[in-house]
Length: 286
Image (cartoon, rainbow, N blue to C red; front, side, top):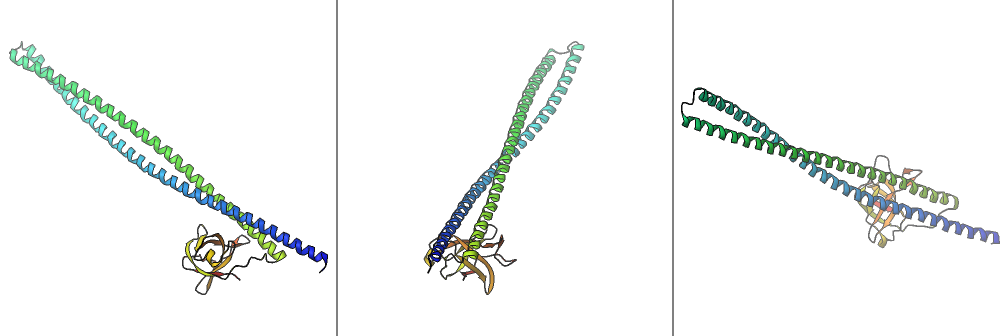
């Protein structure tokens, strides 16, 4: 073998190691962003639940404030009606007193009784005025409580809107992460087309889908490190004798692994109209 051929073989090996390192860096970055997205999502969903609970409590406080305000308004109306009746009674008593004085006081005892009745009526009138003032104060307090509850409800609604916006931003980060992962897969595929296989051969394994989340593109399979599965291994998913999808191992455990659907040219490698579901079988891609 000539020296030039040996040099070319060494260069090919160096390029293979460099591409493998770049692909590993891209995959590690994707795993980091994916974990960060899941952590942010869990935190934001917890904050949204807490805000919704606070909103429920605020609504209850607002309802209670409205009830107290209504009760205070009713008490004011009742007090005003009683006050009017007392004032009418005062007028009647004052008229009788005037009649008695005009008739030159036919009886001192009767006049004394009427004066006592008038004094009692005036005391009752003052009592009703005091009750009306108390009712007015309670109504103002209820209105203040209602306004405070409405302000708190608006604040919590703003917090909910902010948390929802943050969750939407995290979703966009996930999309960006997916695009980076697709770019990494494309780079590896271009290397394979130009220089051939990089030497990663998956051990022959068979397993099944333990859990599936098609919306998040996350699936759990029943094989792992003990079955000689490695990160980056590609497996075929099938149902009966029907092809479903090709998946790639992205997280590894002792007796199970996490996989995502492989993408080629930005498109998922799965049968149109079919989603991976629990119970589907998986096997090594050869």
